[in-house]
Amino acid sequence: MQLYSTKNRNNLVSLKEAIMRSLPADRGLYMPDHIPTLSQNFITHIEQYTFEEIAFNVIGSVIGDEIPTAKLRSIVEETVNFPAPVVSLDDDTHVLELFHGPSLAFKDFGARFMAQMMSYYNRGENQELTILVATSGDTGGAVAAGFYKVPGVRVIILYPSGKVSELQEKQLTTLGENITALEIDGTFDDCQSIVKSAFLDKDLNDKYRLSSANSINIARLLPQSLYYFEAYKQLKDKGRHLVFSIPSGNFGNLTAGLLAKRMGLPVGKFIAATNANDIVPEYLKSGEYAPKPSVQTISNAMDVGNPSNFQRMEDLYGSTWNSMKKDIVGYSYSDGQTKEAIKVIHDKYGYVMDPHGAVGYLALEAYQSVVKNTNGVILETAHPAKFLPVMEPILGDIDIPQRLALLSEKIKVASSLSTTFEDFKGWMIAS
Image (cartoon, rainbow, N blue to C red; front, side):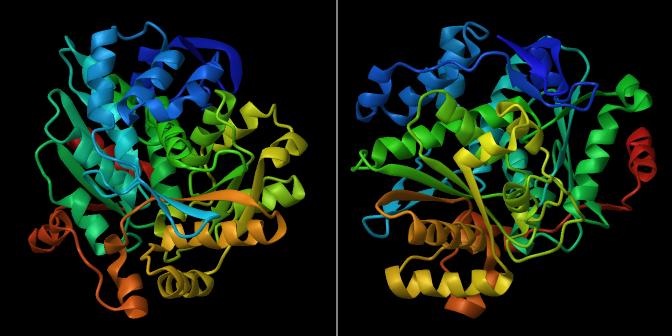
């Protein structure tokens, strides 16, 4: 398997190099040079496969013989050893629950796969691998859980001060060991900019072996395509127009869905559901991509003003706006609309949905009001207990899983930094 940079298709590298380097030097993103089409027999008889078997077939078809078969099976076992159940609200509306992993967020799938792949490729190395990751909420907790105590790996997580929930913050600031948290006095976009700059800095690259655990890394992206197949497997009615409504921030999740479609999954439409950070929905309307500073919302994991994975979306469609519009439609919603949706969903269905999933619900509802008789799946990306300050004023007490409840007693440990790369670089050189 080879991968190319979205800014230069002639810049080909191996899977190992793409995962361990994360970013090409030209600031593009890595993409597979070939996206395989899965057999129709596999799609038709997908109910016969376990989630683990689906994962092995899909990942194996993409990466080929890059990893020995027995090792790939072991990696897959560690990646999908918790469920991704589909819950039906009514005949047309379903919820794909992606919060049953260790950090209670969808990013557990990608983080665990990446940790296993990096551990495999890191064997025999004498120098420690330093992983940099920017988080707007859930990525940090998932990466911290996935890489905790992994030998030969140090993880540095950058998060925006005051813009993640208390429990999200505790997930990435209380583990210690090989996990370090940096509290940045800015936005997620500032954190992401620092991480990208670090990969292009000669001094840091001379001192450290650097990699990233954000969805800019192809190892985070590939496993996110798996649960689209798992959702399709669980749907009883497979004959209707299939629609996935995806709460979106950095757009890795939606890009992974596009890869699943390219591999043969029969998806009719993807819905890009955003909060006030509506860069992609506006692009889909106008054809003009206009990133802007992110604004803070109650669906904080989606507070991204310049989504990295838009490069990959453009690459898949040859930078052709009209082609992208055929597969993707976008909607955006305010905090007020999101809060009202949380209440409506609970009153109508008895279901507790987090602020990100609620945005996905609103977008699916809007789409289905125009396109009738569709099979709609909302990606519920995080457990609602991670957002108590938002949820409890609307619905009252929320059940808190024990592993989250235990975090409230732990002490936060984080270093505070400004938004300048120079401050970050100085901290890195001194650490």
